[in-house]
Image 1: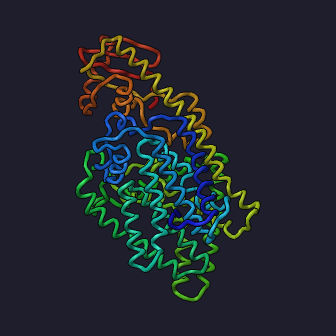
Image 2: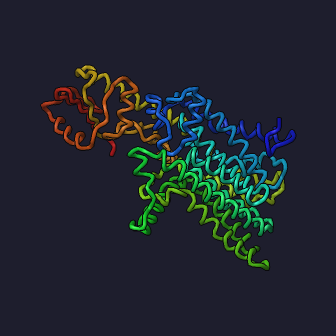
Image 3: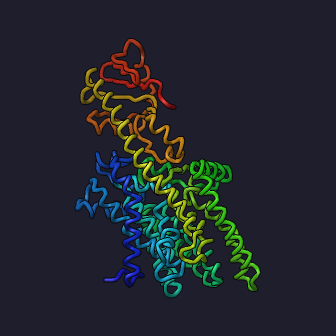
Length: 499
């Protein structure tokens, strides 16, 4: 049976090649085999995503588990399914951009593979539970911009709206990729002189987005989004907020996150690649603006602004939130920025040395993935060792079921990790923010993973418990932490802790 949009031996070869390439990129994360962030709590309690508005994620994972109540760890099966879906979307995108029925392997690496092979997507793949829904959101975002072009306007918009709705129901930041890919295909159409097609495609995609967003807000947000964390971080800016100040603050935070990539040789390679893409877009824009007709000239202006549009769309939808979370997993559309950087090589013949040079950002991503996998393993080893040592000391101090544990201080990173981050600063943002971080939930979950159970606390309880950390209550002390006890209250204070 043929996959829709694929036919022939060349397509089957390309799908197999890209899938193997994606597996090579994912391999170090699979070998690390560690729980990442929310994975710890999901593995302990099996809770899902519906209260975050990611209803399709919950339904899919429940179906895979053959269980309707919670979820269990099935990694890397979920990642394999997700990478399979991303493979098909990557090949489709490469075919659409190049206009070739069977792009060669270099074209696939330049114009398809970056939807997975990019630095920020490493965080998405790190999750054992969330990886599959995030992969499907990315794949559907790419497919959505392509199916919008099929058939008449209403038919194309309908399929686009279905795809876009599914993106939001799996993982909302996938919309960033949908919007960025819409800009990318607009530039490709203008490059080929298809000005009316460019505007028609953009109109279809925006109409699809409006319909999908309205349906999502009515059917999902109204009935499913619940919880303190979700309520705080899903609030959209209002007319009574200082919108300009909030946008500026968000832009600065987004720039800091992107800025960790531009360090040393990697920064030179990535910066030069995007500069080349920007120069090519300006050249295409000038060519369009010299053509007669309003559609061509307006298209030229849009293309000239496209490099800035793509940068704004990196954080995308989180920019309009009042209290967003800026983490690498949100920057899914950085994939489109990498593809955009390579558009200048579209006209180069196969075998051109310049097309091979354009693969350097992809090589950097592969190197980063393997360094990251090793760092993940070291981070888990270092944290587990510390938690086990504290757990042993708590047992010796008489900690029992029902007792209260309060955590203070931030654990230091392994010296090996510190050295690696000097070379690859982006790893400092990709590493899981879990372990002992004062009263953070991840610290308590880490202890529960190792059999030391304690409840979470209100901030006022945690502050009052500081009074136990006096010399008279000290029961144990090591070079890395102290243990204090007063009745059924135990406090652990990390010494020389990182802040």
